[in-house]
Image (cartoon, rainbow, N blue to C red):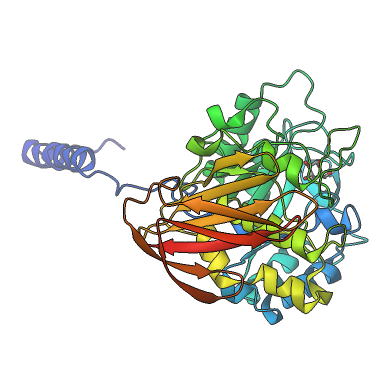
Length: 401
Ligand code: GLA
């Protein structure tokens, strides 16, 4: 049946359509923030399974670690992410979806994420830019969108993305691809790049990852080296010199996770390791068993005054201002105009180390010095400060004009 319309009706229909088109053109969609923008404004803090447990991960252990992060007081001083590293994944289904190892994660990843969230914490996973992860589990190469969508559906908040089995892959492209996939998945997920500094990510990764590893894997030792590239605390520390200018809010150099509490170093050495990671504005991912920490280790990991140095809103990575062989002075400016100084003694005997205000660019004469490990004000000092520093240890002070 043919419908005939009057000329006036046609005219009003035309005008109506015209106005609708004009309205749609002029009515801009409200500006949407990219979901990954503005994350990690201070270095991420949390716990990761790798350093202590390697491939030996399961849902009960992860739940207990979330419980311990709360009961130890770590959550209250800023630790928030519980991250399962390699080995949670087993295969892909016929549609290419990533499938968890159901023997070790029988309740599924979503239930575990829910549990972690119920504790007021955030949940992270690990994958790899290659065909397989470093432990031979399925990698994300070719499945970036599928995996990112799955992570968002599971309510993942943090992704560590590794670099094994990437022969012929371009690092910038591979990490950009996953960044875009995460953006498209629509959930704010902190993106932790782990390509071991192979392609100097500090030169190109700002805006792709929120943090990037700068070296091969840390080992739980003072200065050991492994033939595959792993290395101890001071070897990693030395490789951070010169990278300071590349770090800032939302984009951090990552000298790898903490070994504090894993028993390969002394308490004095762990105190130095933690102090220097805080001076470096490094991500603070604990890597020990949180369920049975000694009081000494818990006190290192939860010293709020030292953590505040790491988390300072200026986000300036501290630098080594003096290197007298085994005796070093590191300094970091804070938002309140103060400087935090670490006097670091790498030698085998206790030694007095000093710092002048000039070296740390303080233009005043008099300043108040507070010892951040003793949690004690040491008084007013004129132009310089010195202290006896234990072998392999630090004295960490805040100097306020
Ligand atoms: C690489 C990473 C480590 C860890 C392992 C897991 O070595 O650098 O931090 O994630 O893979 O297999």
